[in-house]
Length: 456
Ligand SMILES: Cc1cc2nc3c(=O)[nH]c(=O)nc-3n(C[C@H](O)[C@H](O)[C@H](O)COP(=O)(O)OP(=O)(O)OC[C@H]3O[C@@H](n4cnc5c(N)ncnc54)[C@H](O)[C@@H]3O)c2cc1C
Image 1 (cartoon, rainbow, N blue to C red):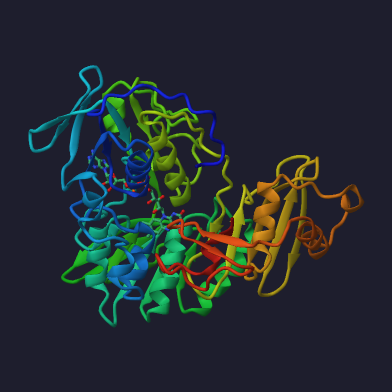
Image 2: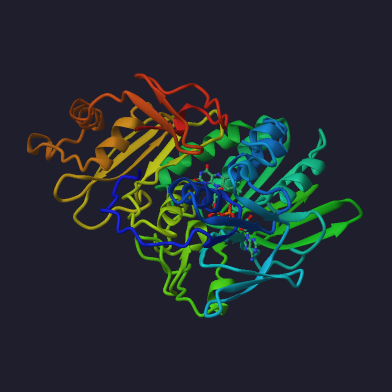
């Protein structure tokens, strides 16, 4: 059972009641599995427009660059959900929801009646209005189809341009460079990961990218893209031009809200939900990247996983609240450990900022006026991240004797002494758990590395 569970308010349900879930990403799949486990009698249908059904979106870049096999993307055999008594309609797009009639309409002209509906429609890449952005060979990397296209372009000598130096763009640049490809990365802001990193940490990261042979263009944006025969040219605002074979747009994603909006549900940045994952319409819940539960926060896997669980619990018979979550960012790209938690790009008034800065590493903590950890960034050295993550999760307050401490190592040692050593670990990607003082090197289920484990 999820943390944060309130006493169950069990409702009577008819044995044939039908739960329909739209979206076969992690939020949709978790909602389906949790609803099946908690409400054995209901019918469940999962509708998704991707023909492949559920796959591990996080591993797309590693698969495209041939660093992970396709099997890592698919955790279960194709018919596995059916063996769990969950019907699937893959390759079907939902075009309209009639909230009053409790019916949804599919692109092929058919319709489905539902008693409860969960929207888990995820997010879609933002395509910037750059002249030439619609040319063949220019695409985002968000779906298996995108990854397939990129994989086909990655011949041995391929030169890949990436527009956008946020987390996904930067990780992709490193993945491609480590697979031996030439990479040019463009970021409009003066430093990488501008929404997440202070400039000094970003400088360490930029230095690492350059050491991997990645051509970095910071503080300038793409002005246009042109194509002649097989070569694309990326023209930048600084008047330079860069011939490349393929361009990946890594310029952010935005929640898919149009179905909900057209059905009259409250929508801001995403679909508005409460902590039960209920929307403004009766019998309709929503989960994952399509929601606005976390304001305009990062669109991440683990919150989508937890929200899917919560929506699945609450579809019929239960009332479970979404557990409080800290959602750290761990860089997946090998060679440069990076851990970010909280809003580390800026220091709020009244907060104390303690940092250590060496030629290869940068570490910083910010503390609230009450002595709680507000944010942390460890770049180049993430050894103590589990202690920091636990200190934040447990609301640890720095003792008053350390109120003016400026040595980050002393602060981290103090919080490590007060947070018990981990004895169990959970994979933040697939949920696999493992006992022992040290996390597994590689998750045996989804193959992510040790830094994707949190101390459970
Ligand atoms: C390369 C890459 C690396 C990433 N790395 C990380 C990482 O390290 N850590 C992290 O936290 N996050 C990472 N993410 C982001 C993470 O994958 C997403 O936050 C997560 O997958 C969102 O899950 P979701 O279920 O909410 O939505 P999605 O996975 O987007 O699933 C939604 C599904 O709904 C379908 N759909 C939408 N509309 C309809 C409709 N009308 N009818 C039928 N189906 C519909 C969509 O096609 C999609 O299949 C990464 C993403 C990518 C692409």
